[in-house]
Image (cartoon, rainbow, N blue to C red; front, top):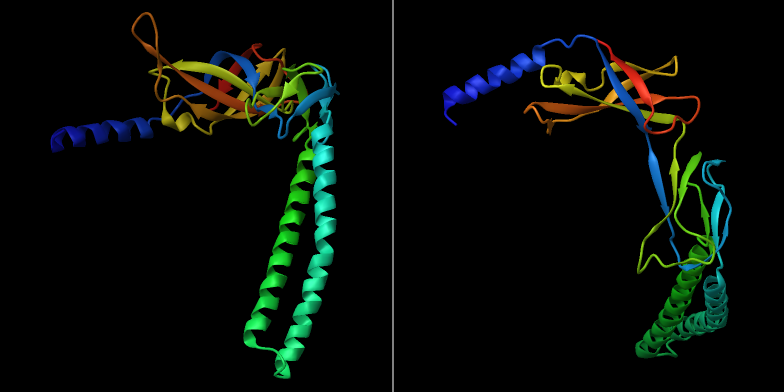
Length: 257
């Protein structure tokens, strides 16, 4: 592209950016503002499903319980190994303290002192590794109870009781939640209505004679080609609602100038 064409393009872009956007009223539909898909962090059989589709839940509520048999036994074993290694650390510490005393009195060679230091480091390392194994086992046992990360509502359950889940081989969704306080309205504009200054514009969304205040959170730059050769550009408005509005409901959207 030569300098003349570049200058022409920049002038057009500047004109588009400077062009004021008039208030517009558009038809649209609702969608969920925030969809959260819950996965398992450990493996096991689904023991209990504690919620039902459509149920309102709070952050921290238990959604699904796995059987936890493997996790309980793994934790038991990790604790036993950790317990068995602790006396070795204590003994190695006593031997090292004695080695330092003898070395200070010139009754022990530097080589022997180093051996005592190495033995203590080995015992301490094995014990700390066992502590880490115990912590990991605790983590996996804790995650046999799958809890809600946010408050919201259950819109779909993808597993049933006795279903085996294993995130290491198949990271499937278990439950889908939505934040019922945040909704989204979706609409589209034509090429003449589209402008980058639409982003962050104040907007109202009217649903069943109730108006909600929101803001334009997304504008499409690629466009969707229509049958007549024109393009439409999708726009999303995020707004707060006092209750969950189902997806796909018709709404009237007004974007402020």
